[in-house]
Image (cartoon, rainbow, N blue to C red):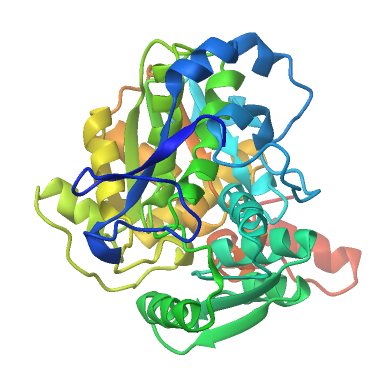
Length: 415
């Protein structure tokens, strides 16, 4: 951690040493005392020219090692995390009338979600602290990413998920050998129980809203976007929002690059939640403190009624000059169909919520159609095939007869 200066509380501003086991500000507590990792930007600027990254043959998040809070010598999982593709799908850009629209497909990470970026940092930090067991609570993606990355490092995991977690994600956990605790309650119930268990048994804490280092992994999606766009920063970056950690990480990544002079402007952020669970959108639009919300949405990965990192998320959107919006589950299903049929990208409901939000904001004139926009698809649709079928519809069922097929295709207007 050559470039890490320490940790700063986002609530009281107190600066602390980056010591093992320190997750939150001891003065402000676990609710308000969220910490931020501080870097020596002058040292990075002096010793890491941009061309060093551009010419790197390490096509993972570790091409940005000077911006990461890990020791260069610490063993890493063999899984390739990061350097996911950035597409400009022609059919999608035509459909939306947005010639400068890009899709960052983070469903191509090892366990099929952006959360791998945080989990790979978590398992490395656990090894640095000589821990053998790591735990977290999750609606699904953080859990599967932790289980996969921990398996690659030979670490034991305990994963707490709410009972509604999709079977595709639970299956990943079990295949990766995790000890899966299905909490028969809400995400908040799972989070609370995981916190109690972590304190009781002294496991390493992967909960991204508590552990300040995990946002540093998530921020690498922004570093990649900037590099893949030849350091030409988009006007907007669109992110689905649950706990708030991912959008906070995106903002941190662009800030890092701006601080060292690798980019000359910062993007606006659009944070998107489901209208069935939108505590942060409501707080932002009504300019008030957030309040707990129901978790009534098909987008399980962002169904977080009690977000654990609200301030970082809200500050990121405000500081960027951006905004937030909530979209219906029907809009999310429509976005799944639209993305798949115009780009060949299969996103889960939470993963495509950003696209649904963008479509709404362009339709209402908040974002201009000619602006340069990147939408981050945070997870692959195979994690939730039930809602994929709900979005796309059932297959055409026919008897094994060509005449029967011809008749059915004619009836549907497909012949």
